[in-house]
Image 1 (tube, rainbow, N blue to C red):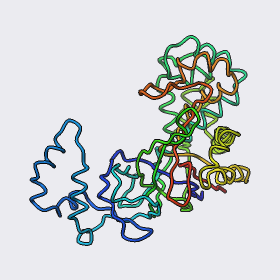
Image 2 (image 1 turned 90 degrees about the vertical axis):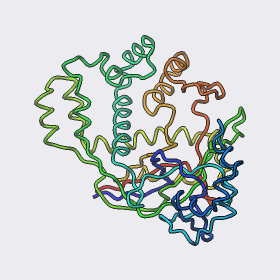
Image 3 (image 1 turned 60 degrees about the vertical axis):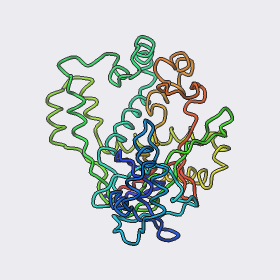
Length: 379
């Protein structure tokens, strides 16, 4: 049995953006969430037929400003039945906020981290670990794929073994990955955090407010087996794929290998957030440097693994780009635009030296956090 502890707020989005008036503060530390239809049902008919409101909502760029003003004026939340409550200590005023709230995945109002999220994180760490462990031997493969291909999506198998999968083995990874089993991880409480992207502008002084997010807050714990393998299916694969390199990959599907891989990946990625530039940058936020030091110490504890999961946690590319930037900076610079630069979205032109530059920061008014860190203590 493993013990899972939330170290920093975790947000796994459902994809639903909830209208801000669905949240109403009931005391200094709690907000209730309501159905938007219930909130609207309290508006008088004269509001719902107001021509200004209808014009505003039907325009090419609809605005909810007037609607929210009417809600604030007319709705009596004490007459509504809440869906659930969340902790909320941020000093911003919800009644004046205009951004929607990103909904956390939950089941019967209990927040959870999906097993698919855990599985994706584990497989990403496993790939990173194998690439790092064999980097000197596979360097020619890396040069061949990066300098020879135009596809931004680098292929793990080609990087490892210097060739693509043949038709006879097209389903190998799908079959292999199906042997890794992860269950949903449930917790009890949710908290509302304000999220901003920090570090924009040349001097990293810029801030881009994004939204509020429902999160699984720090310090919650639960006990379960984080992951295990379908040994029967692995044995079937061993009989089916007896030749190298496939049998090598199958044999690496062991718990101890994945645990080593997770910490190897987390330790390396933390280096990007604990160098001198970012240490100084985080000094203007309450508690981030202290939490990063705490996480680094956790990684030194026996039988302990730290993962980073959920939204706002992706580094530029969690695997090969980080390895190449640190092991072959010349190659990284040369092929930055071909493989590593983010898709252009009208933002400031990315720079290979500072990429990734900005950081998503979550705040509850008392502390600031880099989101998504969880600790696993295993037997």
